[in-house]
Image (cartoon, rainbow, N blue to C red; front, side, top):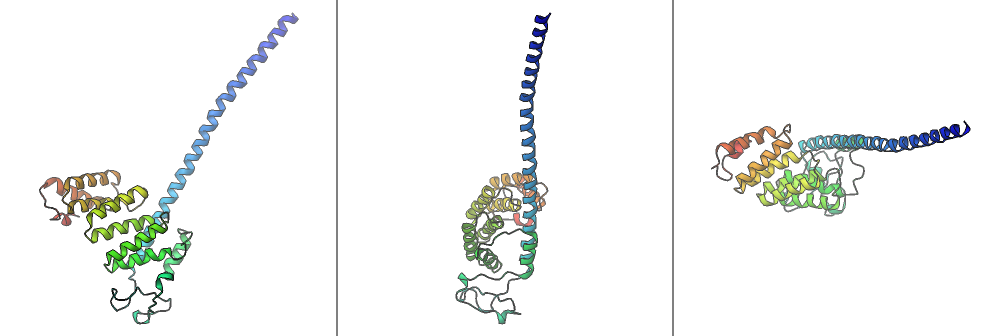
Length: 264
């Protein structure tokens, strides 16, 4: 009787031990699964925040472009870019400074306050943002070579800045307006490779297609437009891209640069 009872106790202990091992081996994968789930949620939250901040920056930049940059009435090619003082009421009161390259340009108070409120720029790194703003100024003045150099200087100094993708897109615009279509295509490729989450990608793809058309590569342009419509069907340029693609499909003999602008 004692021998049977001892045997029963032995097997009971063995079964309990095996059950405990099985339980611990099953809970470890479950814990790892939950941990990966939490990491995925955190990544999704961070990506959503990045998109929100990008939209905020985009809207701020559009507001900035609507406000004309004051400049001297003298020729822009004969004098250095003017530096605005906060109290200057008009063009006549703008002071010229031969050393403006080494001094920061004051930002518009409304723009500065809005950026601080949204916390979209943590550090302007001294005067590096001046390259970006000077690029916008030169672009508005149709000085595309000077604008392109300023945007390139900004990107070289701060490739990870929140404005970097916009500077890359503006460099694309400079090349396109300068009729350097090969460089425009290259700039669009750089934007897509370095800033794949940029809100400017749909516009960049459309500009790339237009550059291909200007170079007589209508088939490549059509492929680019289809890619744009597949990836960004709800973008602001989707309708114009669709019309341009339909025009290319209806008339494959359209001469380079002839007629396609009217379908945008």
